[in-house]
Image 1 (spheres, rainbow, N blue to C red):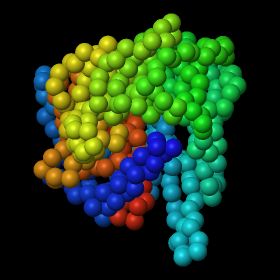
Image 2 (tube, one colour):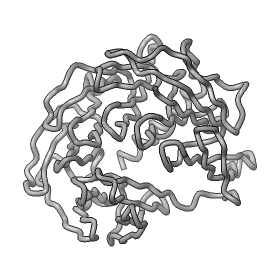
Image 3 (cartoon, rainbow, N blue to C red):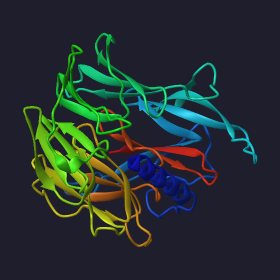
Length: 376
């Protein structure tokens, strides 16, 4: 329950901040009045990238009233358009229609679904295996329950995995094994090791510091499983050894890189006070450098599929601090700001090759606006 309260607080703050964000000078997208719901393409001219130079933005696509849904390919993205059909009253909530649209980013051509829907019935999430041959699929009918499947990418054939779950937390242990932290309404819940043939094995974890609450943070990569305990200590264990090893203290959130070689960890500067920093560690918790970002709030971090870049959304009350979305280039070690002072309302979303990033913010009326940034 603490996790749900924390998420609600973050989303409320995101909505408030999005309305007052300002556009910084530089190579940025237009910020509103000359755009339209069909998308606008802003071309950003910049010199050829040189070694050790920051990440370069080539162009920015902007879509009013749309939120990120999923990537269909490198150049094709699926957006969810939201249309207000009835204003809220003192006794009734506002009513909306939702329409799924696919957009070809090469020419911004759009193809809409035949009929809009009054309410989004299910949300589907899909995670591809490292070799791309399989995918773990979750179909959420509400915020607490989901059906899970293993899908073979080449044929589209699926195997349903039995057992209810309350979290969407998990990752691929290797090319043929997925690990799911199922969660529970009354405790930690199962940790399920799921083979691509549908076989499920329950994993053991011996850690008194976890308590009886579901995992707040959980990640998987290259044969290792990571999580944070109730003391905000990042730990690691394996399916063969239920005794965890301590890696990083004061860890608020973390993300395992897709290749399993790096950990991006948000570390709290001082207990009980706002302010954290983002640092990179190797898979065993050894620091790979100093802080790459600092802010009062870091709501989203996301590795690109090839693990070459890390995107992070930051907010700092002091406007001279880090505000907006930043890209860390692991090859050069450079950190670069992108776009105006974005404060995303949805997770940051990379295309399959890591050449484009989707960022959904809110306009002054709290309606979604999606920016898709193309990198050189």
